[in-house]
Amino acid sequence: MPERIIEIGTKKYSQVVCLDEPGAGGACHQYAVTGEFAHVQFQNGPVKEAGVNGCHQEDLLVIVIDRLEHFQAGEYACLANAQALAHCLFALEALRERTTAREQRGVEGTSVK
Image (cartoon, rainbow, N blue to C red; front, side, top):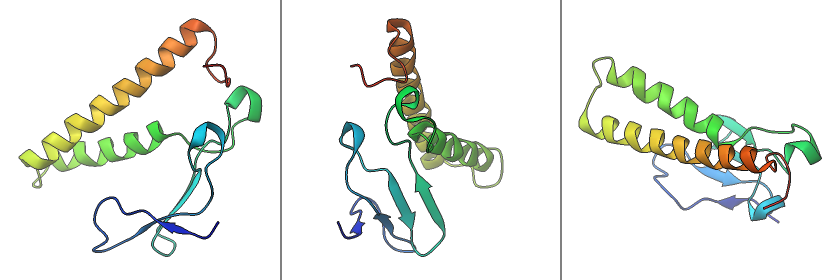
């Protein structure tokens, strides 16, 4: 599959490109940001079945949350950043709740639904 440009968000200063085809769970696992700004390798397959081989979406949310918190603590604090921060925190909490529920069912890290 050729590289696929992600058509979500702005492409004013950079561009996000998907580098692979959907795999485990139906999601893609490799992305790049214009040139070599960033290359993200997501976990491909459940950790207990495939071993640790990439990051998780939670990791990227943590990075964005940290940046927004620092902006909000400085001269770039604004309503838009506060709203974005709140939504990122909400997204991270939702993913953590999903993980906790899977841990409680004893299926975290596996392909069991």
